Image 1 (spheres, rainbow, N blue to C red):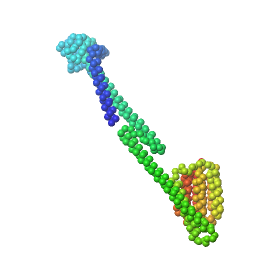
Image 2 (image 1 turned 90 degrees about the vertical axis):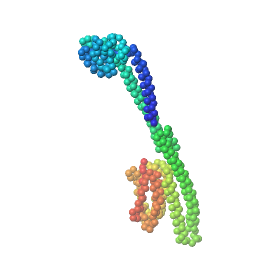
Image 3 (image 1 turned 180 degrees about the horizontal axis):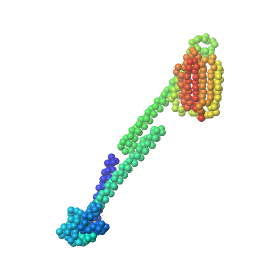
Image 4 (image 1 turned 45 degrees about the horizontal axis):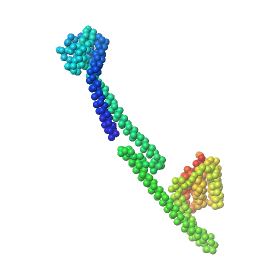
Length: 421
């Protein structure tokens, strides 16, 4: 479309220039004074050529190179009324040549008779020069140049406009990539670029709608899980409380099923805690857990000593090698406490109290390394779902750390790695 418009405008400009130039050239070249001046100049050129090349009347064919070079100029040479040379088929009347130096109007387009001195005599030379055609050719060439400049300029203007629009789209897409999905894409015109911008904008709107829908679903899910957690924990906590009262009342005859019910209730409560903990950690984006940079000793010193103390209180023997590095780490106190609570809970349930618990803490490859090893009770029903350890992995990831665990035979090992700063 733009190319067609540029060609049309340029063609109109070419026609106007041609019409104006041709009118001016015809008016200028029809002026007798201009014609006389031009013919006089050509006669001087012929005289200079004849003199320089010593051309004689018997060797007038030597004028051929000059006439071929001039192109639109024709010569007719008369001597004593006889035609000796002609470079064109249209000639003055050979039988009645005009008197020298008089205007020759009868056999147009020949205009003037000029006296030229040759090497062996003087002759009359008629000169016909179509100089107007030269000017018309020059004007046509200039009009063509104007045509191409105009068409190229118009196309470049349109292209530059489209390039600016493409640059605008690029900047706006970068804004969308930065997360500002509320930014509207600019739509200009009705061509392919405008169609592309429209489709990008529609895609943006659809994505915003999906994000809003996902946010509503997430908020409703949080609300549902919170309500469900409260509804389940409230009666379960009351049941556990009643069982604790019954278990501690000496006046009530003990029954083996009472202890089983109590253990099952505690197991169910722990399972519910793990499920809800896993849900909230796995769906959290990290904003609810502020992470701060503190020293390793401040973050883990008290927690590790408390962890070892509680293990000893539960009847476990401990072997430990603790070397806390002097560096810093990113930590959230609540999550760190929850990680070690989960590890402590696993040891209480599954570790064999006969064998010692081995704890090694130190620095390894720019990381804080914590390794805990224990022997698993042969008759224990190890946590098949590993929800506690899965939650620990999630919390370690929020610390930009890692957690690995493995069991070989009756030996169980947990490794924690925190990046040091």
